[in-house]
Image (cartoon, rainbow, N blue to C red; front, side, top):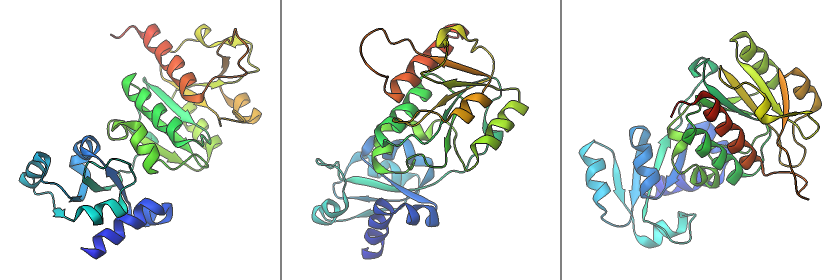
Length: 249
């Protein structure tokens, strides 16, 4: 059991360990339920109904003391259950070419990234792309902010943004960059076909070279004195504009 507790601790604390093992940790009943099909094993400290359900599906479940659980838990009020989960690998081939894609470039805040993924899921996006330099998808704060949505749609991590943009264009997917210096408003662009919405770093936005390579550059009008919008809010506005134009509900 000590070996399993040590593994969980390493996976929670070290991105390198997560990458090496191809595993990550989710905590809480809802996230464990969402992860069910990809679970390697479960640790729990209370006899919850979910445990019986998981064991009926041949999921390995191990009981630990509340003291042991508290030592590895990352939440203030534990629900006394966590799971070690296998990472799923996706590529651009897993994305629908006629859907809406969210492309995050060096988004740094785990709460922002998790909220973007959750919103993309709610808006029926076909997937999310993460550039190198974006906060770790498997950071526990990111995972909690997704509320389980990371299990609902393809999320692809890429090293070369420019090459990825070129591949999207080859697939006939329009690329739309968000930029404070754009002259066109976000609602003046057609989102009805395959489209990738590019979102930049919270402080710096998108690099000029990336904006130039995109098919469109758009801004979200700011009428008050705020300098900019939160990146997750910007994602929400644009995703729901795509829904409005497609009128698929």
